Image 1 (cartoon, one colour):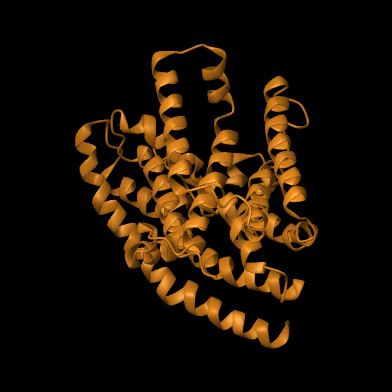
Image 2 (cartoon, one colour):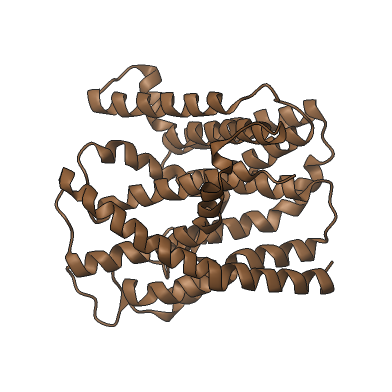
Length: 360
C-alpha cells in the first residue's frame, strides 16, 4: 500500500533544510534559532529512507541486483545533472577570496563526488565537493549497499524480536554519541560519516518492520508532532536562557540522536494514519506533488541560493530579509520541477523498465 503522507512529509524536511541554509544568504533575527533545526532534516531523510525501502521491499519479490539498479536509477540521473549545474557556482580556476564558498577547480574531488565516495572523507573540501548537498547521496549509497542484507535479517523477526532490535539500535546511537563526547579524538568519534549515520537508517528499517507486523498501531501523528515541537522548544529555550540543568544539557548534546528517534515516532504515526485510511493533509495533491519534487529541490537549492548571493551579495541580518525567501524558494522550486519532469522521473522510469526486463 502507498503511504502518500510520507511523500508529503518529505517536502517539509526539504523545506526545513532550505530554511537552515538561507542564513548563508539572508539571515533573519530569531528565525535562525528555530531554522537551525532544519540542519537535521537530513537525519529525517535517512530515517525515512530506511522506512520506505523496508516497507516497499515487503517480503521480497526482487533480486538484489535489481534493487541496486533501482536505487541507482532513483538518485543518479538527477545527481549528475545537479552536479553539472553546481560546478560553475562552486568552482573557479581563480576563486575570489570574497566568495569563500567557491573552491579551486580540481578534478579529483569532483570525481569522488561523481561516484558518490566523497562522504567517506572528513576533509570539507572533499566531503562537500561538487554539489555540496550531494554528500548525503554518498551516505545513502552506503545504506543501499547494506539494505538487502539488513532486511533479510529483519524479515525473520517477530514483534518481540523487532522491538529488541529497535531498543538495540537506539542504544547504539546514544552510546556512539556518548563515546564521541567523551573522546572527540577517539576512533568512535572519527568514524566515516556513512558509518556514523547508519543508526538513523536502521531506525527507519526497524520501524517499518514493526508496521508490517502490526505493532505500534496506537501511535498517532499528533504524538510525533507534539514530541518534536516540545523537544525543539526545550532546546531553543535552554540555549537562549542558558539553562544548565542536567536534562537541558543532555538535550543539547544529544540533540541529533533524540530527533532521529522522534522522527521515527512521527513516521510511525503518519504511516498508521495512512494504513487506517484516515484523513491526512499530507496526502493533499499539492503536498504529494511537492514531495515528489523534494529530492530535486534538495539537490538544487544550494546552487540557486549561492547564485543569488553571487548576484546580490550577502544580506545583513534583518527582519526585512524575509522578503528574499519567497523568490529564492520559487526559483529553486521551478528548477526542481524541471529536473524532476525532464530528467529524474522519465530517466528513472526507463531505467527501472530495463532493470525489470533484464535483472529481475
